[in-house]
Length: 360
Ligand SMILES: *Cc1c(COP(=O)(O)O)cnc(C)c1O
Image 1 (cartoon, rainbow, N blue to C red):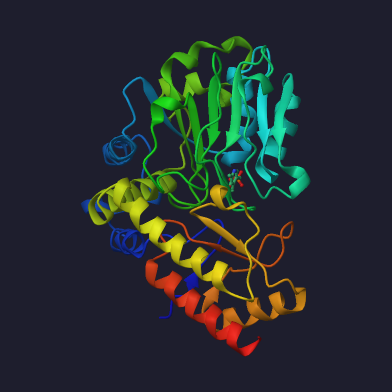
Image 2: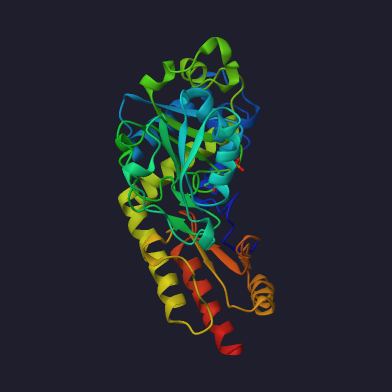
């Protein structure tokens, strides 16, 4: 068996420890005689799985008791409008930092008033706009951000001002990559397929007091946070396998990595190595404003489309998978999520050096 060095943006690499544990438990989960995929979501075994996943995430992220944790379906793309259906009364202030906020703006406009407080579009989203309270529309209910921009490789290092407003954040591509102060947010959501497990489950962390904001008579049950919270994420059949894998990923973060402080140190080391090499190289450039650089997604180009293509093809032959950049940025992108080891980053840098030498 050969496993590649996988730099996929999502679905993305999963820690080998998690895959092996899932493999060991695949046919007979804890003496139940069946796989997690085959068991009732109402069974005692599954109740333990979901309770443990939630408790582990709560410990890891230090989520206070006045926040609920939900495991939903429909991806980040459902949250783009579910957030508005549940929270928007007078309007939303959205900061446009690329593809994922563009989509959120489009969806939330279908539900209510949207004010785009700032955008880095004119510079192809290579930086995070710094906003002041005055840039916000006084009448909106919340400020909405995408904290880590998966495609463009930017990341908020400081949250925007939002006095008198709620803060809603899409953490799909940075959740659990570092400790965060959950109390600074009112709602966090994240699809699991970048840092937390397989596609098909979305984590929502929200203040319990927000559950009563929407008129429940007008809200389809599946789109109501309150309904999912009251039913402990089991209003309907939940994505049981995904929740199990999120639980294993949390267990790995707690027991193998030793928590998010450690994870952050590892991630910073990985990212620093890669950025330092790119910045000192004569062939590669990363166009992102240095102070806004992502720890998780590192886009880079050679400046020559043909050479970029050659890089991707030769990398593939060398066992480096999914390094091609997003079509809107071009070039290459190394997604170095939690599950991507320091060894994988070293291997990539060695390959980049060799390629640079051969193509200088
Ligand atoms: C991947 C991603 C999404 C979209 O998730 P889907 O599961 O495809 O709906 C949303 N936001 C961010 C930041 C992402 O990286």
